[in-house]
Image (cartoon, rainbow, N blue to C red):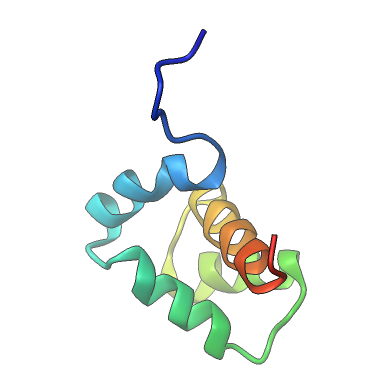
Length: 72
């Protein structure tokens, strides 16, 4: 059993992402959306190389943003 209201999936990384990199998640999403890249792994690699994010954090941001944009 998980506690009610527990955040699961990519969003569970958001507090640590904001704390570690000092930018709100909304800013990261804007960066992802403004990038000319569209493929998941291209965006993950871009966040890692250009912005210094760890793989897990980059992956979580990209997955969440693309899921939102596809209406899921």
